[in-house]
Image 1 (cartoon, helix red, strand yellow):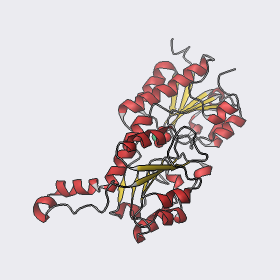
Image 2 (cartoon, rainbow, N blue to C red):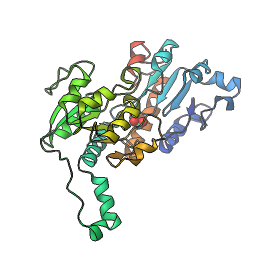
Image 3 (cartoon, rainbow, N blue to C red):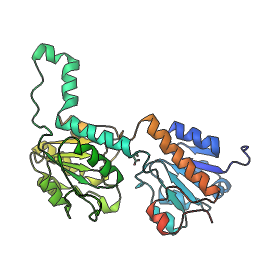
Image 4 (cartoon, protein in one colour):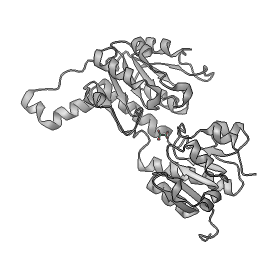
Length: 326
Ligand code: DGY
């Protein structure tokens, strides 16, 4: 295919380098690094049929592209794209499930162990020479032995985490919008009950209006002074101010966080706390996995332009029948 015959794709904002290279191989790419549509002329905006984005695509941007047909979202969590709004305009949205499940589940278990066994703090102790000069790292307050892990959001990733945790001999329970028929783990119909019954509350739930600040002061109180929160889902699901307060006052014991309310900004008070392990949203961030995610975005866009069924339309698009280009 020559560049003349390659379908055009607008890449909106910062995008993974391998993913961009794959898009450039298959499409004629225009990359708006600054997410600023005013860089395009009215004619150019009117010609955009496909957008690839990692993160936020405001509705105003979607609405400023009158011929837009499809948005390929790089990432499984597509809370940055209003898929309902898109469906209302007849725009399909795809995301990147499955290809990142194992990577995110591995990171979730690692983060859980890091926070429970204070491994980053112990590593800093070894690296700084304190072991030699001050003595051994103190025994950790917590161990996984005999613990219950409560998973909020037992979807594909939550289940992959649960399967891994089975190997650690912990008890597992979960909260979802509805009970799954295919798992034997105890189900808590409300989140407070899950927090109450768990030593470690692990959030995997997607972001968006239905989970916004769902883990609030009440849930943290239910988790209790020996409780640990691990968040690998979205920062928006936790009331971050309430979490900081709970960590400072001992309402809960510790937290391991890969996601934050206003990334990449992490509140100073959170960064100062020694009972936190903080990661910069890296759960799926290996090169191998990001290549698979980028390829899946490109596959969906290729299928769209070929009028073939999309591989991974989001549920809102599937429900609206936006499964292939008419
Ligand atoms: C995802 O895929 O949703 C990850 O959080 C990366 O954004």
